[in-house]
Length: 440
Ligand code: 4AD
Ligand code: MG
Image (tube, rainbow, N blue to C red):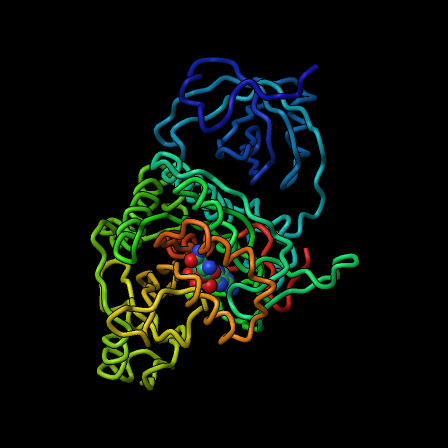
């Protein structure tokens, strides 16, 4: 016999007056003499199940009494609309069946330190706030992919085991690869997705990416998920236009479909409602000036000499001057990856942009126009101390029908942290991988 429920909490409104079976876990339970209130969590939501002694058998009442936090069970009863109930509905219980007991569940309603919760991440994901964050994560991913699909992009999956570096050689995870030497976990799918772009015109890859960064900031993971669109015949301006539409569509969909989760997180959505194109744009040079003019406003955002990259405090300061995400464009080529197209009017800067989220969440997108000239690309590869042999296939893309093209990478966790108002990125992925964390 199937154990599947006949209804879910999310769709309970359709069942008013009907007898249904729900299946889930006990979130909370209180007893008041002849009444037992079971707050049942089924993954789609929570509902109060009211067990009245006189309405059920003695055995059922005893089973209900014995239920503990996170015991799994099936509860059968009649759905009743009730304005006073948190979700608007309650279940009048007729039968309770225990499936799996749970004794001394480690996460109790009292406060726990974040270290404890992180060590119990496999259980913590059941809690209401974590649940809301991870649901929004799923929505962001679905929104991003569906939007790109609708715009004619083809998903083009790129390898995780790779032979080369794309985003610098200092943060590669290496592993032995049979007789072929070292393989590296992909820092980006970009180089491969460029091959896809030449085949399909508009493509994107989406998957986990890896950076062996020894940074302990609240914005860095060693394993994070990135979605990377790449477009043929698109220049730097086209690239920024695509990004602002893309990000706006994702935010709008979360506001539309995940209001309840944002409420659970007590997210003030005022700033999110303003996320519509066009986004403001400033150059790297203007950003340097802005930082100098607002010295002392954000701790650690000290003035920088031209040519240095921003730290997290600088990004926070820059973003604080705008009411929506802001592009910082045309960084010095020296601080950026080898593949970026130089500005024809000013070759020391690249046709690239970082998109900074408001409210201190930092860079959510990095993107650029790519070098399409084989000679210049080869020169850049050499200048970066990389071995030409490793990049022959990538150079081929420029030897056989090259086109100007552009693309970008959006970090899912950064976006989820911003949209959900989660200070630390570690809560935006089910199992974060960090410098000091690989368990559970
Ligand atoms: O700016 P990044 O390094 O760009 C690239 O990897 C390009 N190849 C993308 C492309 O053009 N196709 O990374 C892109 C984004 C960042 O803006 C950030 O959102 C995220 O990836 N990111 C990280 N997220 C979490 N932890 C880290 N250590 C991250 N490093 C980058
Ligand atoms: Mg970047």
